[in-house]
Amino acid sequence: MQIPKLQYSNRSREYNICDEEIRDKIIYGYLFEGKSHRKLDEEYIKVNSDYSRGWQSMGVLHYMGIRKEFKGIFSEIDIIDVIKELRKLNDTNYNLLIESLERCFISICSEIIAKDIELESEEFHQVIDIISQNEGKKISYYTTRYERNIKNRTRAIEIHGTKCMACGFDFEKVYGELGRAYIEVHHVSPLSSIEDEVKINPKTDLIAVCSNCHRMIHRKKNHVLSLEELKNIIEKN
Image (cartoon, rainbow, N blue to C red; front, side, top):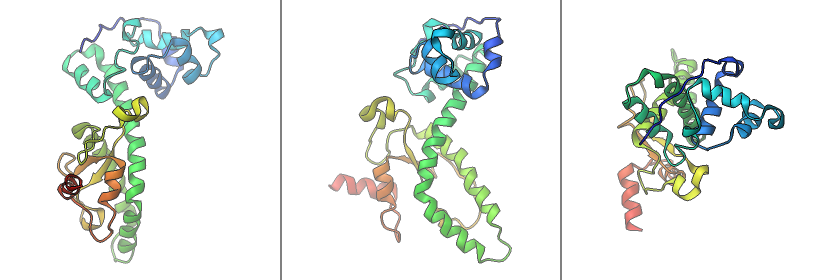
């Protein structure tokens, strides 16, 4: 992967005007979606491009050292792979860009995780009900524990990628840009089976699966399928 050199601008006005979230969206939109400066101004800064002519977003990008060579350069590459390549450069000049892309990656994962958590929310509430009946157990403690899993799930996606580990389904190959970086994450050990708080290993305790496989894993309430069991079922049919 050839990554152009950053060419910084000393003008910080546009960069400072935009908050961090807007700057991140501008950077992602330019690098991964190839959007024009005018388009970025309209979508993220909410200014009339006939008036701004794209100068606002261009100012943000130039301050970050991002010039025309970067436009759409990563359109066919997964964001996590880009982050890994930038880290390999071991160049502090890219630190701001890496930090921005890491925030974008977390944002993408958070959307995936929010949908994923809906699948296990019923089980989660069952756990809460059980805990509520036990003396000395605080619901807030387990709520915090559950929320902490978001970080583990983000790491799991980084490790396992976004292809289903059961059937091999790739959302991006089928849905294009709409499916980019989409996958669900499944807890190998159901929440209700873990009585005490344990340290989760994203590599071994979490797996990446597509929506259909995830639902099949949870299809029978009295028996949550393992990855191998589901793979065997798929192979036999």
